[in-house]
Image 1 (tube, rainbow, N blue to C red):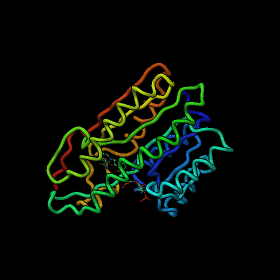
Image 2: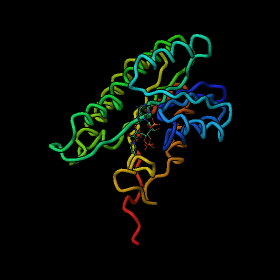
Image 3: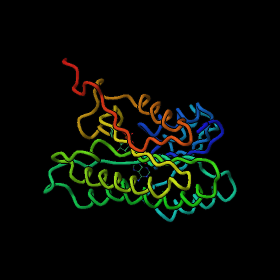
Length: 237
Ligand SMILES: NC(=O)c1ccc[n+]([C@@H]2O[C@H](COP(=O)([O-])OP(=O)(O)OC[C@H]3O[C@@H](n4cnc5c(N)ncnc54)[C@H](OP(=O)(O)O)[C@@H]3O)[C@@H](O)[C@H]2O)c1
């Protein structure tokens, strides 16, 4: 896909890799609708990225508001070419200590709301004769189970199945689906879990890889990609 002039929706644009995707795509000439709850952070990003970035303050778990935004925005503006389902959260801990409400919020945010937004955008993409692209941000936790992240594992394993099914369902409508499995990236995601260290991947590098995947020729599909830091351990102090 040639990115210049394309319309992208990025969920979780207020920080981390969502902000990096927004930066990379606006630089390529896309118009990005960046969705998240923290409006101040979105506005700060807009002041850096300019008018190619539209901040959209929305909780993706508020399905009525998300549907109203999709209806209003795309009834009068060009239809979206790219959807990056990136917003996500992690609550970690032993299974007998993980609060049921934290499980519910993880499944809601990382899985159900991905389905709810995707089902609104797919009909718009089906109207287009051009190639469109949905990118789902899973995690290596969508491939490998590990202790104390059972709820996060469950939500990201589910995104893998959702993505593979969609990929086979939508390819004949010229809609690409790519599921992304990153290892640790230095973002705010780890702020509540011991912070980051310099040997994690950098969000900018993840964003450049996603840009490359979006720019591949129309009849060329990268349906899954895993990325990891080469040496994942913190440097010795
Ligand atoms: N960092 C890593 O090592 C890593 C590794 C593999 C996969 N991932 C995945 O990468 C994605 C992005 O994470 P990140 O590392 O960039 O962390 P981050 O900086 O914490 O970003 C998470 C984003 O999700 C948004 N978000 C969370 N709940 C939301 C809701 N209900 N409605 C709208 N937006 C919501 C947050 O915005 P607001 O708080 O403003 O709403 C924020 O913009 C997640 O899906 C995560 O699971 C991260």
